[in-house]
Amino acid sequence: MPTDRFAVLTDAAIDVLAELGMRGLTHRAVDARAGLPQGTTSAYFRTRKALIEAVVRRIADLDRADLDANQLPGEAEAPAIVLDDIDAVAAGIAIVLDRWMSTARNRALARYACLLEATHHPELRTILEHGDPSRAQARAMLAAAGAPHPERDGEHLVACIDGLLFTRLAGAGYRDAPAPPGTAANRADLAAAVATLLRAFAAPA
Image (cartoon, one colour):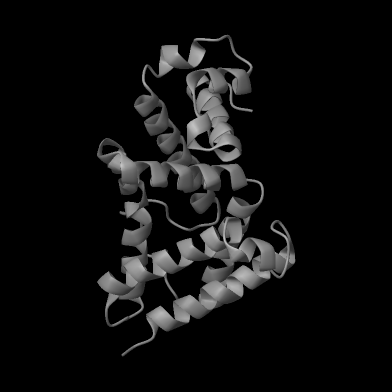
């Protein structure tokens, strides 16, 4: 468990979001989840908007750490992934997706809750900027592979992978997945899907 107060509070808020949804995210609920005195969260994040923005920063930091741990760059300016072994790249992406479906499931659900909230509150739409590095990396990767339309197809690739994650978390894929999250079989199935996408988008004209 993290010891710094920012991480403790935002991790608690992530759990509240995953379990209760955006309507359940209150300062008092975060205090209770974190096991801290009432008023602690509001002392650090005076408004609900500030709390949500802090949660988004924490999610982005944790997601970036997952990508870095699997040698998948989480920064836009990082060197592009080389697609000389598509199956290996797909396996690395599958490991991250499987983690977001299993041990980090609450974080993935909280991420989607924040994104949906931003559609109703323009002041929160800076949340969308946290996905920019992944899209930039996808464009650079496809450009390096010689794809004919890397700018367009990089956006499409990220959208497809994000859709794969979403359907396994909340859509029909949650019910019909061939294997439970957190298993080798699930990672293998995800890797096969991602490899198919990579080959399709990286194919020369």
